[in-house]
Length: 441
Image 1 (cartoon, rainbow, N blue to C red):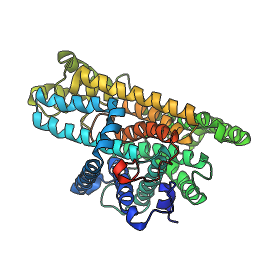
Image 2: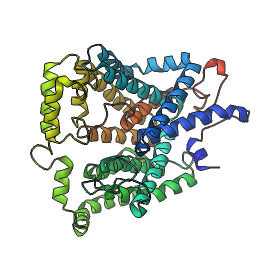
Image 3: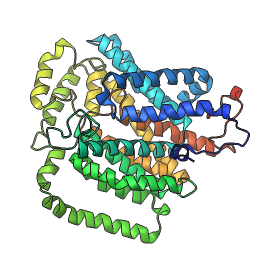
Image 4: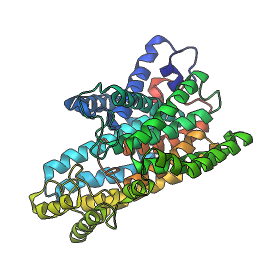
């Protein structure tokens, strides 16, 4: 049995023949490609990354068309995810750069549709396993680049952190953080949920991932590592033997106590690094200046905004963009706060949409954890907190093809589908007559 089979393993009746394996293979490939492309691991391929997304668009539209009645029902059950994409699409009508807004809105809509389909198609367990295994591959490639310089782009960012296969050290740090969380979840799964082969693979990748996380020098992600680990232990305490739980807590306390000493010996100024993670001065490394510009623009266009993505392209806001560049928004054109970004682009409508979606996701994952005690839902909750915290200080959770959106939408939809399927006698992976539009074809 291959590792991919271990990841995607779900109950399948003996009557299933080889012809019935084609569409599951297509969906599995789609899941792998979406996780890989949304993680920005293909960013250095240039147009190649766009081709991958076009392929994902085509496959998703084909699959959705094939099963439209049941997909429509799924979307209606999860209609809160439609509010924010609808607000982005509607903002084309009043956008200062309609072409830019339309292009970005289509990407947002397709990102949500693809992620919703994959969340409907696969259980939380499969999603956690896939995220872990794909991100481990990106971490290994990043460390290969660090050790050998094998790829034709720079090894380190201007700030000194490892870039790896990503465009920025913070990207590597965030992906490594999510990878560690997913690996811990897999290691805590019972043996009938995750095979010994899979656990061995991810356990081997755990130390490499932690190494890549520290080499990235993305201190926001490094500082979130210990709270994330603590949350996983707390949420999954019933899955951890008592003596192991005590040992883990001891290790966390030791890391907190000895970590500053180790970093000092490594030549890292902990105080400066922590300040750098949240801002090196009273302006949060220019973030407060960016936020001030965003609030001024949003006050002028409070209800509808200026159009999704229009602020960064429209000539009417050239002066304000100059202020953001002076504040430091040069390499990444963003306000470094997902809520303010949405407020400027789509106004109150978009803000309501994103808050409703984020709040519904938290509530649904908590419900799933209480009902099932699942390690996967605990992993989703930790993902949720990491996504929100990193997006409040970074350029995430507002644009299309975004890894954070893909994760959150997939987990949001899958959590409900898991609860629905658990109430039925048919296992989630068991196919039914195609005329009945089953969830797993």
